[in-house]
Image (cartoon, rainbow, N blue to C red; front, side, top):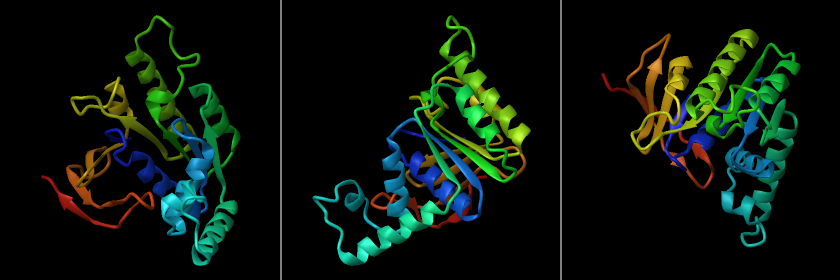
Length: 219
């Protein structure tokens, strides 16, 4: 789980991870519930091409010079070779699971941005609380990760108390829980490793990417 406040960098971190997985020849399914698919690609191009995001999102206002155009074309060419699928606004959690299963890929990964925006679909009864329905979706994703032996990363917003929004079950199901904060990425849970650490990295907002940092122990 990658958690954090609104506009805190969760999507940027998820896309940075997606880029690394694609470059390692994973088939990556990126479920996008927050923005149009072209915005996802623009962010990736800004990252791997070292092109300011303003040029990607407002090219008529910030016309890219020739050197930047070359970087944009090179980035687009690299992306075209990846096994990357972007699913925009899926109708249900069931459709996400079906797409992942149909890939029939042993070296795959699923990233969901973000969990609370996925429609309930057939999970749970309409009279069930939103908490129970989010918990059901979380359980389905955990079962899918075990079935496919894929890393599955789900993004989650935090409530006003700094807890994962709408269901505690999300944190219980996860192997690892990260929180993106202004001073870096905090490890709140790590079922098979050390927790209580902070990766002190900085978000370069103009390129939608995090810089490489170092681990600091909080224990």
